[in-house]
Length: 279
Image (tube, rainbow, N blue to C red):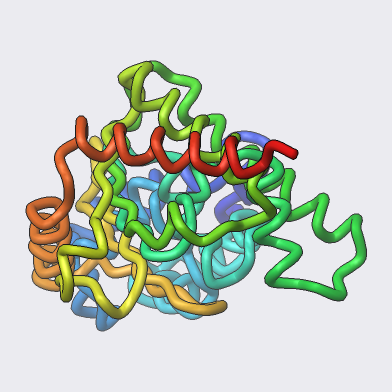
């Protein structure tokens, strides 16, 4: 009898691999929770794999082949979804972001990647990699700008961002770059494409002093949380952990300025940069 065929990489391999996993699990008569227990992961994690919002790693592919009796099917095909244009610590988060129906983000230091202008992003990448060749910076910039295409849909995903005031005050790329970057954010708010709040310095200590936080919701999969630090990131799917991060985000929103006050501050700071940039 012929073995299972490889998936077609040209036809959304992650979605196909997830659909095949769901089919194999149901054929084996197992729930997501039961399969998760066999792999020492949560049922939510299995749901994310089936929905295509999580990348199947080789170690899980091997275990799935063993538990579900699929020879080496998942091991052979997980390579088709392993390649990414994003850094390793962010690849899964970026790919999940593209499938999210709602994104809530707290940015303590930088304008969120989805909202950055080209020149602002270039200044950030050059600061990260001061000795990198220009073509490397160009590649990073192209991937960053490609992410912003998800905002081309007028309604999805819902994007709610809380910016620390430090994001507005740290001059990245020069006054002209900051002027255009903040005006771009303000324009998205005025177009009713995003919801934006600013967490002012006057708020003092807050619920996310340790770093950035992103929450993602999906139509057909459990929610995810992504916490990030310098050259590292962790994608969380455990419901209790995601719930704690959601509470953190709610506390941040409660401490932030209202959307109207936030827009006024962003536009005011942008004008300050513009005037200072004049000879």
